[in-house]
Length: 419
Image (cartoon, rainbow, N blue to C red; front, side):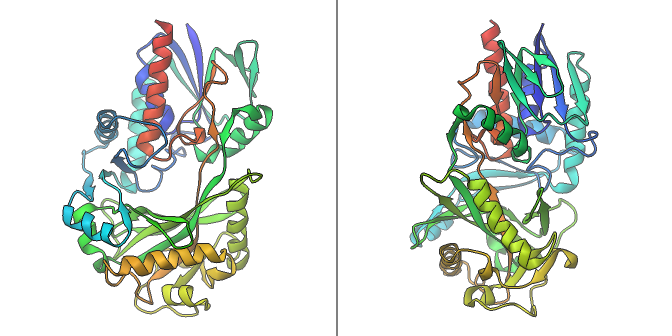
Protein backbone atom coordinates (compact mmCIF):
# COMPACT_ATOMS: atom_id res chain seq x y z
CA UNK A 1 0.00 0.00 0.00
CA UNK A 2 1.47 3.36 -1.06
CA UNK A 3 2.09 5.78 1.82
CA UNK A 4 1.05 9.41 1.26
CA UNK A 5 1.74 12.27 3.65
CA UNK A 6 -0.46 15.37 3.62
CA UNK A 7 1.07 18.39 5.30
CA UNK A 8 -1.60 20.71 6.70
CA UNK A 9 -5.29 20.04 7.32
CA UNK A 10 -7.17 22.77 5.48
CA UNK A 11 -9.42 23.12 2.46
CA UNK A 12 -7.01 21.54 -0.07
CA UNK A 13 -6.30 18.59 2.25
CA UNK A 14 -10.03 18.05 2.76
CA UNK A 15 -10.63 17.86 -0.99
CA UNK A 16 -7.72 15.44 -1.40
CA UNK A 17 -8.77 13.12 1.43
CA UNK A 18 -12.44 13.13 0.44
CA UNK A 19 -11.56 11.85 -3.03
CA UNK A 20 -8.90 9.30 -2.03
CA UNK A 21 -10.15 7.95 1.32
CA UNK A 22 -11.85 4.89 -0.27
CA UNK A 23 -8.76 3.93 -2.26
CA UNK A 24 -5.86 1.61 -1.44
CA UNK A 25 -3.55 4.30 0.00
CA UNK A 26 -2.23 4.79 3.53
CA UNK A 27 -2.82 8.46 4.34
CA UNK A 28 -0.99 10.37 7.09
CA UNK A 29 -2.04 13.96 7.86
CA UNK A 30 0.48 16.17 9.67
CA UNK A 31 -1.05 19.29 11.23
CA UNK A 32 0.85 21.83 13.35
CA UNK A 33 -2.22 22.71 15.49
CA UNK A 34 -2.37 20.85 18.78
CA UNK A 35 -5.80 19.33 18.06
CA UNK A 36 -8.86 19.63 15.82
CA UNK A 37 -10.36 22.32 18.06
CA UNK A 38 -7.44 24.67 17.54
CA UNK A 39 -7.14 23.86 13.85
CA UNK A 40 -8.86 25.86 11.12
CA UNK A 41 -9.58 25.77 7.44
CA UNK A 42 -7.57 28.82 6.46
CA UNK A 43 -9.90 31.31 4.83
CA UNK A 44 -12.87 29.40 6.18
CA UNK A 45 -11.59 30.34 9.63
CA UNK A 46 -13.32 33.69 9.37
CA UNK A 47 -16.63 33.95 7.57
CA UNK A 48 -16.84 30.72 5.54
CA UNK A 49 -17.87 32.22 2.25
CA UNK A 50 -18.09 29.71 -0.57
CA UNK A 51 -18.72 30.59 -4.20
CA UNK A 52 -19.23 29.06 -7.61
CA UNK A 53 -17.59 31.12 -10.35
CA UNK A 54 -15.18 30.84 -13.28
CA UNK A 55 -14.10 34.48 -12.93
CA UNK A 56 -12.21 34.35 -9.62
CA UNK A 57 -10.79 31.96 -7.08
CA UNK A 58 -7.66 30.79 -8.83
CA UNK A 59 -5.58 30.44 -11.97
CA UNK A 60 -6.71 26.91 -12.81
CA UNK A 61 -9.93 25.84 -14.48
CA UNK A 62 -12.46 24.16 -12.18
CA UNK A 63 -15.75 23.26 -13.81
CA UNK A 64 -18.82 24.67 -12.12
CA UNK A 65 -20.33 21.23 -11.48
CA UNK A 66 -17.38 20.24 -9.28
CA UNK A 67 -17.45 23.63 -7.56
CA UNK A 68 -21.14 23.22 -6.69
CA UNK A 69 -20.56 19.62 -5.59
CA UNK A 70 -17.91 20.83 -3.11
CA UNK A 71 -20.12 23.69 -1.87
CA UNK A 72 -22.84 21.13 -1.12
CA UNK A 73 -20.23 18.95 0.60
CA UNK A 74 -19.35 21.71 3.08
CA UNK A 75 -23.00 22.65 3.65
CA UNK A 76 -23.84 18.98 4.31
CA UNK A 77 -21.45 19.10 7.28
CA UNK A 78 -23.26 21.94 9.04
CA UNK A 79 -25.63 20.82 11.78
CA UNK A 80 -28.80 22.36 10.37
CA UNK A 81 -27.85 22.94 6.67
CA UNK A 82 -28.59 26.68 7.06
CA UNK A 83 -26.64 29.13 4.88
CA UNK A 84 -27.12 32.59 3.41
CA UNK A 85 -27.05 32.76 -0.37
CA UNK A 86 -26.70 35.37 -3.09
CA UNK A 87 -25.79 35.90 -6.73
CA UNK A 88 -23.31 38.54 -7.78
CA UNK A 89 -24.47 40.50 -10.84
CA UNK A 90 -27.11 38.10 -12.06
CA UNK A 91 -29.25 41.23 -12.51
CA UNK A 92 -28.74 42.90 -15.90
CA UNK A 93 -29.71 46.27 -14.40
CA UNK A 94 -26.90 46.21 -11.83
CA UNK A 95 -24.41 44.75 -14.29
CA UNK A 96 -25.04 47.56 -16.80
CA UNK A 97 -24.90 50.28 -14.12
CA UNK A 98 -21.46 49.19 -12.93
CA UNK A 99 -20.15 48.48 -16.42
CA UNK A 100 -21.12 51.99 -17.58
CA UNK A 101 -18.86 53.52 -14.92
CA UNK A 102 -15.81 51.49 -15.91
CA UNK A 103 -16.17 48.59 -13.47
CA UNK A 104 -15.84 44.94 -14.48
CA UNK A 105 -18.62 43.13 -12.58
CA UNK A 106 -17.73 39.56 -11.51
CA UNK A 107 -20.55 37.03 -11.68
CA UNK A 108 -20.75 34.26 -9.07
CA UNK A 109 -23.08 32.33 -6.77
CA UNK A 110 -22.41 32.75 -3.03
CA UNK A 111 -23.07 30.50 -0.05
CA UNK A 112 -22.27 31.96 3.36
CA UNK A 113 -21.82 29.45 6.18
CA UNK A 114 -20.91 32.01 8.85
CA UNK A 115 -18.02 32.10 11.29
CA UNK A 116 -20.21 30.68 14.04
CA UNK A 117 -20.77 27.42 12.09
CA UNK A 118 -17.22 26.88 10.89
CA UNK A 119 -15.82 24.91 13.79
CA UNK A 120 -18.60 22.37 13.62
CA UNK A 121 -18.08 21.97 9.85
CA UNK A 122 -14.37 21.25 10.32
CA UNK A 123 -15.07 18.93 13.28
CA UNK A 124 -17.77 16.98 11.42
CA UNK A 125 -15.50 16.48 8.39
CA UNK A 126 -12.67 15.35 10.67
CA UNK A 127 -14.93 12.88 12.48
CA UNK A 128 -15.96 11.37 9.13
CA UNK A 129 -12.35 10.99 7.97
CA UNK A 130 -11.40 9.31 11.26
CA UNK A 131 -13.80 6.46 10.46
CA UNK A 132 -11.45 5.31 7.67
CA UNK A 133 -8.75 2.94 8.93
CA UNK A 134 -6.29 4.08 6.26
CA UNK A 135 -6.49 7.78 7.31
CA UNK A 136 -4.24 8.75 10.24
CA UNK A 137 -4.03 12.20 11.88
CA UNK A 138 -0.89 13.52 13.59
CA UNK A 139 -1.57 16.79 15.41
CA UNK A 140 1.02 19.05 17.03
CA UNK A 141 3.48 18.11 14.29
CA UNK A 142 4.89 21.00 12.30
CA UNK A 143 6.83 19.81 9.28
CA UNK A 144 9.65 22.25 8.54
CA UNK A 145 11.33 20.55 5.56
CA UNK A 146 10.58 18.14 2.73
CA UNK A 147 13.51 16.45 1.01
CA UNK A 148 13.57 14.61 -2.31
CA UNK A 149 15.33 11.39 -1.39
CA UNK A 150 15.82 8.49 -3.84
CA UNK A 151 12.33 8.64 -5.40
CA UNK A 152 10.81 9.08 -1.95
CA UNK A 153 10.16 12.19 0.11
CA UNK A 154 11.70 12.53 3.56
CA UNK A 155 10.03 14.81 6.12
CA UNK A 156 11.79 16.83 8.81
CA UNK A 157 10.53 14.35 11.43
CA UNK A 158 12.56 11.61 9.73
CA UNK A 159 9.63 9.72 8.17
CA UNK A 160 9.78 8.70 4.51
CA UNK A 161 6.78 8.54 2.15
CA UNK A 162 6.08 7.41 -1.41
CA UNK A 163 4.31 10.71 -2.08
CA UNK A 164 3.93 13.97 -0.17
CA UNK A 165 1.14 16.49 -0.73
CA UNK A 166 1.89 19.93 0.70
CA UNK A 167 -1.39 21.66 1.58
CA UNK A 168 -0.32 24.28 4.11
CA UNK A 169 -2.15 27.28 2.63
CA UNK A 170 -0.69 30.76 2.95
CA UNK A 171 -0.14 30.35 6.69
CA UNK A 172 2.47 27.70 5.90
CA UNK A 173 4.77 30.13 4.12
CA UNK A 174 7.77 29.09 6.27
CA UNK A 175 7.72 25.55 4.87
CA UNK A 176 7.20 26.85 1.32
CA UNK A 177 10.05 29.34 1.72
CA UNK A 178 12.37 26.57 2.95
CA UNK A 179 11.32 24.27 0.08
CA UNK A 180 11.89 26.84 -2.65
CA UNK A 181 15.23 27.76 -1.07
CA UNK A 182 16.22 24.10 -1.37
CA UNK A 183 14.64 23.71 -4.83
CA UNK A 184 14.49 27.18 -6.49
CA UNK A 185 13.58 25.57 -9.81
CA UNK A 186 10.06 24.99 -8.37
CA UNK A 187 9.19 28.69 -8.76
CA UNK A 188 7.25 29.66 -11.87
CA UNK A 189 6.19 33.21 -10.88
CA UNK A 190 6.35 35.43 -7.79
CA UNK A 191 5.73 39.07 -8.62
CA UNK A 192 2.24 39.94 -7.28
CA UNK A 193 0.79 41.24 -4.02
CA UNK A 194 -2.50 42.98 -3.18
CA UNK A 195 -2.30 46.00 -0.86
CA UNK A 196 -5.25 47.99 0.40
CA UNK A 197 -7.77 48.74 3.09
CA UNK A 198 -10.81 47.33 4.85
CA UNK A 199 -13.75 49.73 4.33
CA UNK A 200 -16.70 49.92 6.73
CA UNK A 201 -20.01 51.64 6.01
CA UNK A 202 -23.50 51.60 7.57
CA UNK A 203 -25.65 48.74 6.25
CA UNK A 204 -28.23 51.12 4.78
CA UNK A 205 -25.67 52.56 2.32
CA UNK A 206 -25.25 49.19 0.58
CA UNK A 207 -28.52 47.56 1.63
CA UNK A 208 -29.81 47.19 -1.95
CA UNK A 209 -26.57 45.54 -3.11
CA UNK A 210 -26.46 43.25 -0.06
CA UNK A 211 -30.02 42.07 -0.57
CA UNK A 212 -29.54 41.55 -4.29
CA UNK A 213 -26.16 39.81 -4.25
CA UNK A 214 -24.93 39.26 -0.66
CA UNK A 215 -21.45 40.00 -2.02
CA UNK A 216 -20.69 42.34 -4.88
CA UNK A 217 -17.42 41.61 -6.68
CA UNK A 218 -15.98 44.25 -9.01
CA UNK A 219 -12.67 45.17 -10.63
CA UNK A 220 -11.65 48.63 -11.81
CA UNK A 221 -8.65 49.89 -13.82
CA UNK A 222 -7.62 53.18 -12.19
CA UNK A 223 -5.82 56.09 -13.84
CA UNK A 224 -2.61 54.98 -12.12
CA UNK A 225 -2.72 51.81 -14.24
CA UNK A 226 -3.34 49.59 -11.21
CA UNK A 227 -6.31 47.22 -11.02
CA UNK A 228 -8.45 47.73 -7.90
CA UNK A 229 -10.94 45.14 -6.67
CA UNK A 230 -13.39 44.46 -3.88
CA UNK A 231 -12.92 41.39 -1.75
CA UNK A 232 -14.82 39.64 1.07
CA UNK A 233 -17.95 41.75 1.52
CA UNK A 234 -19.58 41.11 4.92
CA UNK A 235 -23.14 42.42 5.33
CA UNK A 236 -23.89 43.22 9.00
CA UNK A 237 -20.40 41.90 9.69
CA UNK A 238 -17.40 42.59 11.87
CA UNK A 239 -13.88 43.87 11.27
CA UNK A 240 -11.13 41.78 12.88
CA UNK A 241 -7.35 41.75 12.99
CA UNK A 242 -5.17 38.95 11.68
CA UNK A 243 -1.79 38.25 13.26
CA UNK A 244 1.11 36.94 11.23
CA UNK A 245 4.48 36.06 12.75
CA UNK A 246 5.79 39.61 12.87
CA UNK A 247 2.99 41.94 11.76
CA UNK A 248 -0.75 42.51 12.05
CA UNK A 249 -3.27 43.13 9.27
CA UNK A 250 -7.01 43.72 9.12
CA UNK A 251 -9.73 41.40 7.82
CA UNK A 252 -13.50 40.98 8.08
CA UNK A 253 -16.13 38.31 8.65
CA UNK A 254 -19.83 37.84 9.28
CA UNK A 255 -21.81 35.51 11.52
CA UNK A 256 -24.98 33.67 10.66
CA UNK A 257 -26.87 34.64 13.82
CA UNK A 258 -25.14 37.62 15.43
CA UNK A 259 -25.31 40.78 13.28
CA UNK A 260 -23.83 44.28 13.43
CA UNK A 261 -25.19 47.46 11.82
CA UNK A 262 -22.27 47.85 9.42
CA UNK A 263 -21.03 46.24 6.21
CA UNK A 264 -17.29 45.86 5.61
CA UNK A 265 -15.30 44.86 2.55
CA UNK A 266 -11.72 45.04 1.31
CA UNK A 267 -10.56 47.40 -1.43
CA UNK A 268 -7.32 45.97 -2.78
CA UNK A 269 -4.81 47.26 -5.33
CA UNK A 270 -2.95 44.58 -7.28
CA UNK A 271 0.76 45.35 -7.54
CA UNK A 272 2.64 43.34 -10.18
CA UNK A 273 6.31 44.18 -10.24
CA UNK A 274 8.91 43.17 -12.77
CA UNK A 275 12.44 41.78 -12.63
CA UNK A 276 14.68 41.89 -10.68
CA UNK A 277 11.90 42.06 -8.04
CA UNK A 278 11.13 38.62 -6.62
CA UNK A 279 9.86 39.15 -3.07
CA UNK A 280 6.19 40.23 -3.02
CA UNK A 281 5.73 38.84 0.49
CA UNK A 282 8.70 40.90 1.67
CA UNK A 283 7.28 44.06 0.04
CA UNK A 284 3.80 43.57 1.51
CA UNK A 285 5.24 42.67 4.90
CA UNK A 286 7.36 45.83 4.91
CA UNK A 287 4.29 48.04 4.37
CA UNK A 288 2.36 46.11 7.04
CA UNK A 289 5.22 46.61 9.50
CA UNK A 290 5.34 50.32 8.66
CA UNK A 291 1.62 50.57 9.49
CA UNK A 292 2.12 48.62 12.72
CA UNK A 293 5.03 50.88 13.64
CA UNK A 294 2.61 53.83 13.54
CA UNK A 295 -0.29 52.02 15.22
CA UNK A 296 1.63 50.13 17.90
CA UNK A 297 2.08 46.39 18.53
CA UNK A 298 -0.80 44.17 17.33
CA UNK A 299 -2.85 47.19 16.21
CA UNK A 300 -4.04 48.59 12.88
CA UNK A 301 -4.72 52.17 11.78
CA UNK A 302 -8.31 53.49 11.63
CA UNK A 303 -9.18 56.67 9.75
CA UNK A 304 -12.33 58.36 8.47
CA UNK A 305 -12.65 58.47 4.70
CA UNK A 306 -12.47 62.29 4.47
CA UNK A 307 -9.20 62.32 6.42
CA UNK A 308 -7.86 59.38 4.41
CA UNK A 309 -8.66 61.32 1.23
CA UNK A 310 -7.18 64.60 2.48
CA UNK A 311 -4.09 63.21 4.26
CA UNK A 312 -5.12 64.31 7.74
CA UNK A 313 -4.86 62.34 10.95
CA UNK A 314 -8.20 61.24 12.37
CA UNK A 315 -8.74 62.24 15.99
CA UNK A 316 -12.50 61.73 16.36
CA UNK A 317 -15.21 59.58 14.77
CA UNK A 318 -18.73 60.74 13.94
CA UNK A 319 -21.77 58.68 12.88
CA UNK A 320 -20.13 55.40 11.90
CA UNK A 321 -18.80 53.41 14.85
CA UNK A 322 -16.21 50.67 14.32
CA UNK A 323 -17.03 46.99 14.82
CA UNK A 324 -13.36 46.29 15.52
CA UNK A 325 -12.59 46.09 19.24
CA UNK A 326 -11.22 49.35 20.61
CA UNK A 327 -7.92 47.87 21.80
CA UNK A 328 -7.13 46.63 18.28
CA UNK A 329 -6.80 50.00 16.50
CA UNK A 330 -5.47 53.51 16.83
CA UNK A 331 -6.87 56.61 15.11
CA UNK A 332 -4.19 57.80 12.72
CA UNK A 333 -3.16 58.57 9.14
CA UNK A 334 -2.68 55.70 6.69
CA UNK A 335 -0.97 58.08 4.23
CA UNK A 336 2.20 57.84 6.34
CA UNK A 337 2.54 54.14 5.54
CA UNK A 338 1.11 53.58 2.04
CA UNK A 339 2.71 54.53 -1.31
CA UNK A 340 0.98 57.45 -3.05
CA UNK A 341 -0.18 55.54 -6.16
CA UNK A 342 -1.97 52.98 -4.00
CA UNK A 343 -3.78 55.74 -2.09
CA UNK A 344 -4.78 57.49 -5.34
CA UNK A 345 -6.10 54.24 -6.81
CA UNK A 346 -8.27 53.50 -3.76
CA UNK A 347 -9.67 57.04 -3.62
CA UNK A 348 -10.52 57.02 -7.34
CA UNK A 349 -12.25 53.64 -6.88
CA UNK A 350 -14.39 54.90 -3.96
CA UNK A 351 -15.31 58.18 -5.68
CA UNK A 352 -16.36 56.37 -8.87
CA UNK A 353 -18.32 53.76 -6.91
CA UNK A 354 -20.12 56.61 -5.11
CA UNK A 355 -21.69 57.62 -8.44
CA UNK A 356 -23.58 54.30 -8.46
CA UNK A 357 -23.93 53.76 -4.70
CA UNK A 358 -24.50 57.19 -3.07
CA UNK A 359 -23.06 57.29 0.44
CA UNK A 360 -20.06 55.05 -0.28
CA UNK A 361 -17.87 58.18 -0.13
CA UNK A 362 -19.48 59.66 2.99
CA UNK A 363 -16.78 61.51 4.96
CA UNK A 364 -17.28 59.54 8.19
CA UNK A 365 -17.10 56.05 6.64
CA UNK A 366 -14.24 54.07 8.14
CA UNK A 367 -10.93 53.04 6.57
CA UNK A 368 -8.71 50.41 8.25
CA UNK A 369 -5.18 49.48 7.18
CA UNK A 370 -3.29 47.47 6.29
CA UNK A 371 -5.20 44.78 4.45
CA UNK A 372 -2.83 42.62 2.42
CA UNK A 373 -3.45 39.53 0.35
CA UNK A 374 -0.35 37.61 -0.57
CA UNK A 375 -0.19 35.53 -3.72
CA UNK A 376 1.86 32.45 -3.02
CA UNK A 377 4.65 31.68 -5.45
CA UNK A 378 3.31 29.81 -8.47
CA UNK A 379 4.96 26.41 -8.08
CA UNK A 380 5.76 23.77 -10.69
CA UNK A 381 3.88 20.56 -9.84
CA UNK A 382 5.60 18.73 -12.70
CA UNK A 383 9.10 19.06 -11.23
CA UNK A 384 8.92 16.11 -8.80
CA UNK A 385 6.54 13.19 -9.46
CA UNK A 386 6.28 12.40 -5.75
CA UNK A 387 6.05 15.93 -4.31
CA UNK A 388 2.92 17.97 -5.04
CA UNK A 389 1.58 21.33 -3.85
CA UNK A 390 -2.17 21.92 -3.62
CA UNK A 391 -4.37 24.84 -2.61
CA UNK A 392 -3.26 28.38 -1.88
CA UNK A 393 0.35 27.43 -1.05
CA UNK A 394 0.77 26.28 -4.68
CA UNK A 395 -0.05 29.72 -6.06
CA UNK A 396 -2.81 28.18 -8.21
CA UNK A 397 -5.79 28.98 -5.95
CA UNK A 398 -7.01 31.71 -3.61
CA UNK A 399 -10.37 30.55 -2.33
CA UNK A 400 -11.88 27.76 -0.24
CA UNK A 401 -13.67 26.00 -3.12
CA UNK A 402 -10.81 26.28 -5.61
CA UNK A 403 -8.34 25.02 -2.99
CA UNK A 404 -10.65 22.10 -2.11
CA UNK A 405 -11.10 21.30 -5.81
CA UNK A 406 -7.34 21.45 -6.40
CA UNK A 407 -6.82 18.81 -3.71
CA UNK A 408 -9.69 16.74 -5.08
CA UNK A 409 -8.28 16.79 -8.63
CA UNK A 410 -4.76 15.95 -7.40
CA UNK A 411 -6.18 12.86 -5.66
CA UNK A 412 -8.03 11.96 -8.84
CA UNK A 413 -4.75 12.17 -10.75
CA UNK A 414 -2.95 9.90 -8.26
CA UNK A 415 -5.75 7.34 -8.41
CA UNK A 416 -5.58 7.32 -12.22
CA UNK A 417 -1.80 6.80 -12.14
CA UNK A 418 -2.28 3.67 -10.00
CA UNK A 419 -4.58 2.20 -12.64
